[in-house]
Image (cartoon, rainbow, N blue to C red; front, side):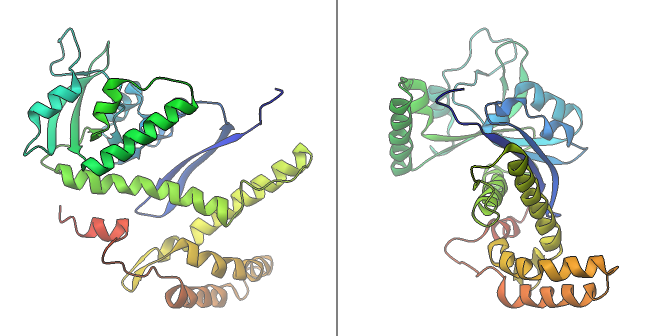
Length: 303
């Protein structure tokens, strides 16, 4: 319509341990994330689904649990939380958290969420440092002004906490481990950053729809093939592979690989061996003591 821009939204599911893309869906940019059911569709017994709070639909959480799978997501500040299933009124969550925080920092409690059909979840809340709280509140007020809305007192109060909900038992993962584990979800953001910067998914020209779609799908095919090619080298004894560093190596070998495939695989083994050597020499992440990678933090969990 006049004054608006068309947009596509890509929904993605990644298997972090195996480095593969479970699913990639394309839809209209205005379709809300709550309609995406990938986490439900891909949930298998004993699997763990990590997703942002935009995907935390009560029915989806229930269905994941019914499939004997697990979920971990952030909790929206406007979520109705009840101490007991039959409580008529939700908790004043900010006051309740202040009263239950262990050493003033952590709350780990099974509660119920949902205004109508209550779902039992484990709520983990960790109090943030005051400097971080002030920063979050400034951002919230700025966003509210841009959208010409009022930010609620409840929202501002709860910005003092990191709020997580899960169905994982505390016997398996204590609060600190849950927060570290949730960092894995950030890999999705890094993947999209790679897609925009290296694969230039967001760069399009003033072309006809047919050419635009051809370019988009060609680049998406490239994304899938790239992820498939680097998967075996992601976690090695020598170190952790950097997708950003690996990209120019794969791009340099793309045409030779294509030529080898056209020749029934002739020379393909040599190309892959050279690519493997280049990964080990040039594409490993630099170890960081002050800010370890997500994988390094997971290795340190000891759970």
